[in-house]
Length: 190
Length: 190
DNA sequence: TGCATTTGATAACAAATGTTATCGCCAACC
DNA sequence: GGTTGGCGATAACATTTGTTATCAAATGCA
Image 1 (cartoon, rainbow over the protein chains, first blue to last red):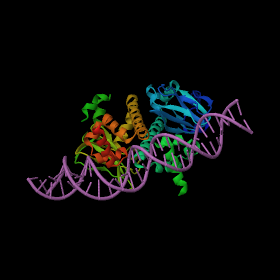
Image 2: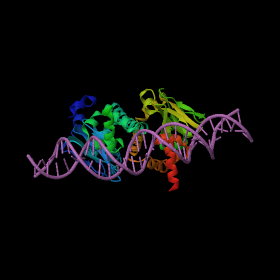
Image 3: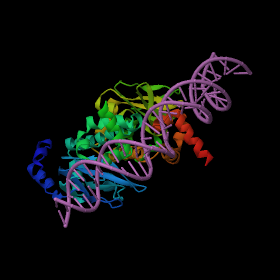
């Protein structure tokens, strides 16, 4: 799992092995809860195989807010970083193979990494990229119609459309399942 | 302007003076463009007095995406950091007093700051906070009605409601000016 | 002060979207 | 192989939201 990332990091083999040794492999079926609302997140997950969604409860309705796929890391970052209860649930969509790392281990890895300029910059850039992504998600909700956002999803994140049940996608787009169905219907007729 | 921030940073007076000397004070009337779409951003602004909006053109319609007030910093961050054309315009709403710093200066300040652990951590935390904010903005658009978001604005960001013309707020909420007017009308009648 | 411009409210109508209910398909599970 | 439950499509109707137009009030400026 980790070899493919090896040359992205200029690290001694010893450091590399120390770091990767902190990760624990698990195989879980679909619909496995990895974190529940109000718990304090102590784990981050790296996806080897499978697909995960992040969701929260809004007046009895499930709202899915994020999707993650192979080679991405998942966690309830704010809860994880600040030791506060997570507002969100994390759950597998497909049977998945995951690697998790405990906060204690990740904290010490990060504190070491922050002293190595090029790794620190990679880390900072990564955070910035996430910020930019969320800015774009926000902008698209105030400027585009649900149909435009669905088309955008097909183009930018085809994995979601292909692998995720449609009712999760509907809540992610902020529309009802019926309306997403209508949007699709309208598109095939064109 | 800078004294009030002085004790937030453990810096020698010499460093502090070097840094603050990079900032240039300007006074501008309302509706002054500070950055135009497609330009590469070379300046960041700190607001001493006044109020600024960030907006972009969407098929001929202006969409306002952000508001900033006293003691906040404004810029087209992605353009500024990556030297790419800015997708957004930056413009004053009120007559304003601003301090701007050039990218060259800020880059060297930042590269020094990154070597000082507690300042680096402040910087990283600041980026994380922005990410968390934008995640929340995104989530609220998919889970809340425009009316709930307007009420939320009154509660969380009263400055916006008090000082910003309503048609800017409407586009920020992703609704038409007519509809925002209706929402307000409905609220006073309750 | 007086005029022009901006801003906000409202009405009437059109379009988009939500809600509830029904039906059919398909996959998981005995 | 049959049954069950989840998922998605569709219809009918209700509600929300957008569009266009008009007017009044507020504001900025000469």
